[in-house]
Image (cartoon, rainbow, N blue to C red):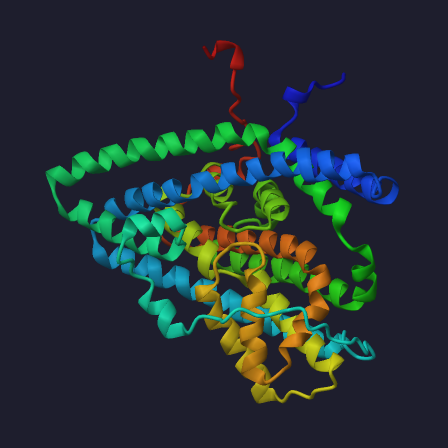
Length: 434
């Protein structure tokens, strides 16, 4: 029996959109790259418009979803020590996985030696932005204007203000209870909006992939095949070993179940190359598919989108070794330890948006005295790798969320173990809209 489009699950629809988009992009690049009509009206026209509408619709949800969900979560924590314990656990786990990630990357780079014999001439087209100082990051955690922070999408400042606002609601007694009920209702509405907007996801993913693969330089991947393959392998190793081992040891939950339920969120992160844009999908995944209490997920997921950059850390580790070897520069143990420390601390101030990893890579290279021009060597394949890194980042967000929730007894394991939990998607009946 042949299924209709509406009978397929969201995961299947997005996967179909991703594969057909990739194939369409390669066909356009191979046979229609010289066509002005296709380039002007299809690739840079239709595909670009629909893809950007999709990303914008996801980003539209981020600020109100972060704010309402964190306020709901923190206002329900009547004991301040609980919030402190929750924050400490989450931050330490994120920093630990980041340190493991970059250590794995450096060790793998030293063993495989991706830069040996590369003899690549560095281009001088890359002009690195100034990386923020750690002191500036700490100072700017606290917004002087929370409305401006929301308008500019400054995730860390929004989190800090939402946490303080939620604590104030919890401490305000009866007036606070009235406000809390309003935010609970707003949070429910936001999650409903997430479910409704998922209807355009397969079409958005198709257009994003078609546009990307119609323009991506495949020759760059061939010239950097060793670097590209090594980075992909380390990213996969980090997911299958680091996250899965931590999940099994600290929660006793099945890593296979976890990975199978991560499909939707991982595909969204891959197609958008943005941890921030995937926040709505990540929160829906951990609450409805993993059974995590909203008071936990509302704190850990937005925080993870900002401070948990394991995929970026792995890129920084492999790229540092690759650039050092390509330029014939020997780095000592102390240099590599400095790279690990710098990248781990830098992840705190790394926003989950495409391309920001290059700014942090410049910071790491400066720390050990490597030429910044070396960044141009890896830029040709970074867009595709950035997509994979984003998928790894949000997988780490969800794994840490499960670990923290389990330790706080705030997770329904029957939901986690139920293969059908959270699979049903909401659809819009446009015939009833007047």
